[in-house]
Length: 399
Image 1 (tube, rainbow, N blue to C red):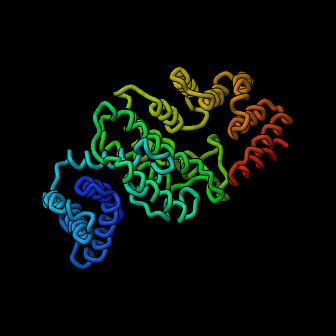
Image 2: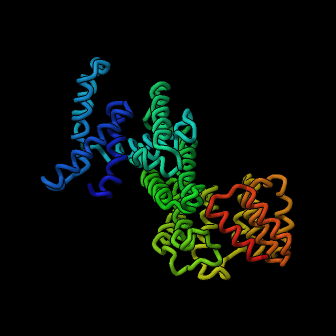
Image 3: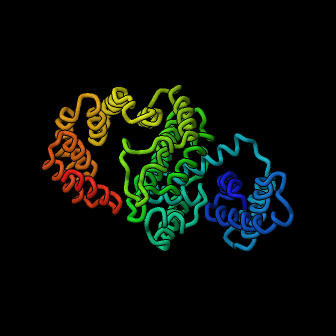
């Protein structure tokens, strides 16, 4: 089975089946069965002219077969058969609506955040339970139970998989974007003891963000989220050394950054800017300044600080203020930045990156003992293995 066909057709197929039969589990099972059948028949019969139509017809047939064998569906069979006989051809608008409804359903507010993430990866992205469990460092059985509970909740609460009114669409899209952002964040700076960067999760987040933009091409914040992911992930190949230890931004080999991702990210950011920049747009703009700077010294720190000022003006919290202070150190110097950073101590005392950022400023100010103490405090914040190795290396460098 061609991976690109699976990527493209899986969410469309599941969405159509959910719309036709109103049963998420049935839709998922029959979509999976259709792809299994395709993997055995297509190598022999050849690739159909319209793979999506073939898959839809096959999956609908399998769904109807299951329904005929199920007593609980007998009263609905005639109605469902009529729906299923509409044929695989659907308008582009209907397909878009179906897929958007699928995303919104997986991120329904009645589900907790863990369930939303797991369902989105399983139902929309088509990952196996094993793949999702591996991505989030839990046992496959644990993740399987999480997904099963989420499906049960959907069934018991009668959570709909259908387009929503525009009055609530913006709020529901926020939830979808947040789930995608969380998937990317876990991939970009993983809590895994095996790997600081989880490329599989970064790829899934980029694909989901791209799908959301395909479904909502004029939505500014969806374009901004895609831009943020691409412009940040461009550095993936240079973010850790051969031992898996993180490399500071200033020490990364920019010749190895992914120029295609930068170009795609800048285009997405340009689309987002037409609507005015929201939270993801401001973050993506910061990422763009890093991505386009030929060298670390060429980074436009003035404009980065200005972006953080906008975030703070819109209610950004202490972590945003920390990032602003770190950027300010390259504008007004580390002493000024340290004074601002120290004002955040009460809020961020248990935050690993607060102490590591302070340590870096203290190192630049040649305050060796204070820098060592800050690195030791960061090490006490239970960092992942790769981050701990990085902090110990930095600690040794100031000793």
